[in-house]
Image 1 (cartoon, rainbow, N blue to C red):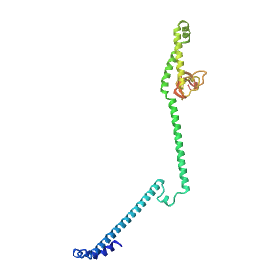
Image 2: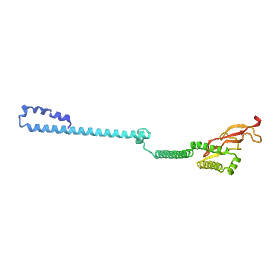
Image 3: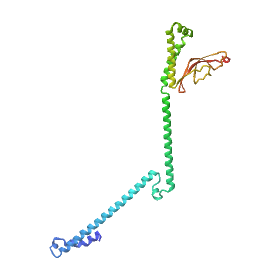
Image 4: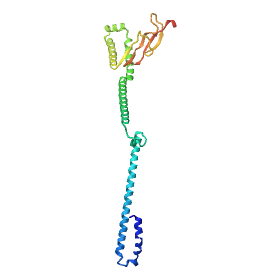
Length: 250
């Protein structure tokens, strides 16, 4: 029985509930029964409506939740909405995704290996040439020692060996100091470069002057004012030289 029908059936009874009519004791049980039936029917109707509303809300929430999940999956895969739900994933799609993931993985490994190799080379390069500035300053000391040795003529050195042994010992000490210093530099990759008689190379030599020299090929180094130095193959100071000038162009 619906809520409206129950109300319609009880409308005549409401007249009987007036104070003037309720005084009849014979009608009271019937009225109370009708009122109880009305309340029971009304309660059942309310419960049914509440249950229907709850089911409707649950269905709407479930549908909304499923739609949200589909939208999220479509956004992650880049596929249009409904593709995964309607069509599904076939073997070809899975194989394609696996191939793409494998390719990305291999590319990442290659990039990591290249980075590791580049870092290793940079570390080696830094270690090899870390003393370059120090070596350039130190070779000037070698130049000073060499000039000191060259300033003593051979005749004076021989005479000092017999007449003045102290002076001879001083010369020998300076010579040994120069040799030891050169050996130390060599252990760290610093080597002398004496281009006497070589063809002039502007990448290795610094021409201080040019002059015509008989019986010498033009463009060759005939004198070395200062020897050059290299550090692990890199030139840290070019040799200062004199170059033979072409006599035909003079």
